Image (cartoon, rainbow, N blue to C red; front, top):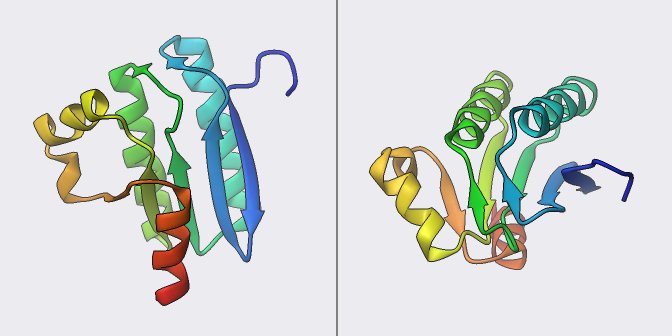
Length: 120
């Protein structure tokens, strides 16, 4: 991990798995850096799906929700999909309160999300 990296992106069979390398995602600079890294990756790679793995994340600011919506919109421009996994119960409440649980697909962990994609 490079100093200051917030996420790691690994691609498997044109599926991008985005993992957070920190337990708290809240600083504006951190989120801007993450957004720029993800936008560049999507522009360059155009994966058929992105799995965002929140395993190990204990807290994130509301800006992360905006970033997820932005990624979801960018992916929908070319019929790709966004899957979210590894959300702890406290964080999942945020998605329900904001009704974002209606637009995102959630899975217990990365393996469950990958299995779903294999079945598609």
